[in-house]
Image (spheres, rainbow, N blue to C red):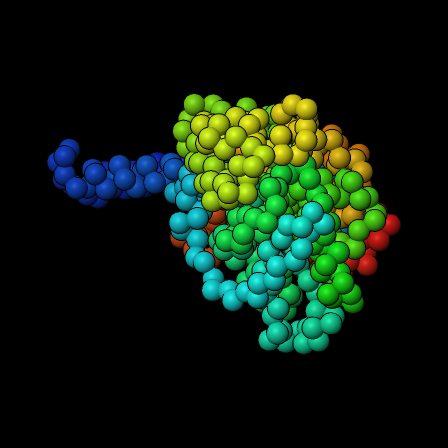
Length: 411
């Protein structure tokens, strides 16, 4: 790295000298301007290669899982090169929905009934054209969980479906209650702490495809729900493996981070308005039990949870809900191979709350930390329209779990 910095410094110096000696124009001429531009570009390239582009940190509780990841998922050992013009955390987070392409996916929707009489919307991508797994009975299935207000139409979900399609796998997207256009039949929505709907979905998929291997991927709150589910179930699950992206590990720290002035302006207010819009759509059902007008006056996610989520799920206080929703408390009980990808600059999930020490004590869990990437960003390439670093992690890990999962037995 020192040699690289030295070479780039030499390049910058020699380039400036060449331009000064060869381009004989005045102080304000184009030659000096070009020299400044090229000099700045070389300096920026030097800074980018030294301070921005870095290999991720892989933390694993067991040597066997760590070795498996390095052999089957080479992306965990490769330098991550964030898009050079938008590597800052907030820019990555804000731009991803707009700059990444949205692959066309045709879903088959299914509504299933929950135990309380509510309905859950599942979007299936059956991949009947799979060349590698033509038999639908044995075609591997990937369950996808979107973020807090996300659906099967989010760009990051569509990209994972596309990666699965290329691998020949089937996908099922679990849309949380009331977010994807379906009616809310009972006065109940969802939260990160409650995994009853997820358990019902997994059981339904297992009954529908009993001989097909099943794994899952969760993004943001979807990842938190998956981690909480695995912590509760231990080995009593049919999931062969799980990958989690940009999860918030300690909800207290996550909400505190999002309440800082800039992040409150950029993210918190918008998320709160999305949550309120979902509640307002189902006002006729929800207003029987909740003061919707009071909920609609919330200014932050914390206030929304205090007035709605924690009450809906029967917690004495919002603090009790946040404690129960934080996956960091259940990681030690995870008994299924789980890879977690987080960016150290994610304002939604601050790095000082990453469960590093807990991961080190569980041989079934690995934590992959990049210096940059933001929240569900991980953009890379000059113009990041197609796959991101997160997509590559998903593809390699999904393929490894499905096709080489026997090496993960008895971690």
